[in-house]
Image (cartoon, rainbow, N blue to C red; front, side, top):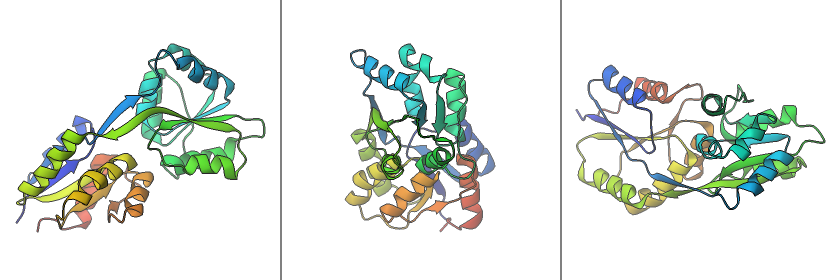
Length: 253
């Protein structure tokens, strides 16, 4: 019987790893953070972002990284509390509350960009000006929604997401060299899916992998790339996603 190894493709809170290891004796956990982030905002252009925020009535955010970056600039963060903030889910809402003490709207039914669009469909009025702050790899669903629904506003890149070449190579070698354990790869963002596809899938013919997706946007990214993944819509966190996967699938080989 093969030992199961869960591979997280991004940063993950140690509490989830600890819970997995304590709950399942026969499971190993590894982290390969495939993503690296570069802020686009800097001291020379921050005022253009501040002007954009000041002009807006509604601001959309779909990642904790956006919150983390804009929190570093008081001229931006100060005006956020005066706006309606729409976020992609409870995790971003909680992080925003923790970082800036600001409440936000999020969909109870959907996650990711789909969740943002669900909220916008209920709160946007004719005179609203909506800003979406995002990464260079963000999907264009919200941008398309702005156009389709004639919503006035702007989509603005806050940071760039790229693949970490060193970590990607390390993961690729790990998958090639360690064939004893049954691998279960965990994706928590569309960007992680795309980087994994570019850096791993296209460079290896390893078979028998299992994939987990957390979040509807992540699942959609897997579907778009024909990566068959396990997805549980009602999972509230990473640990619950792993538990539900292991309950439904025999991956021990």
